[in-house]
Amino acid sequence: MLESTVWRQYNSENNYRELLAKFTHIDIIDLIEDEKELYGILKAKLTKKELKLFAMDSGNVDDEKIKSEFSYNDEELEKAKFKLYKKFKQDKTRLSFRA
Image (cartoon, rainbow, N blue to C red; front, top):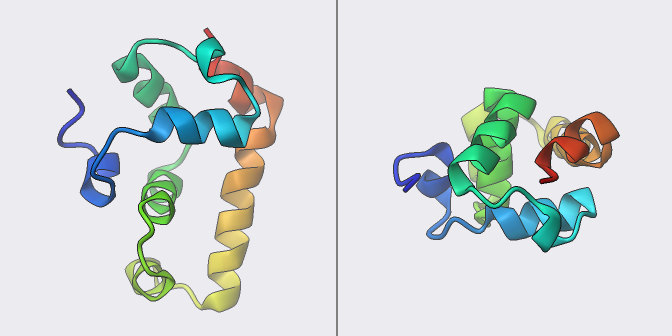
């Protein structure tokens, strides 16, 4: 399940559930149980670029590779990461992941 996703391109496991719990400050048991549904909401709430950045950053891809992928400089990369992780803390995004 979810083998050909953006997430799996940069991560060997579907561990986004744990990361979502961490960044949204929601207990992992309170997240939607169905992996496909949870990933669908993640795709809906993030832009394609944000989802790819989240997958690459979580997959410990080197910052230099991320910068070349998105044509960012150091400052733009930091801003993009800040904006992404800030989005996870917003109620309109974070509460969507709750069961």
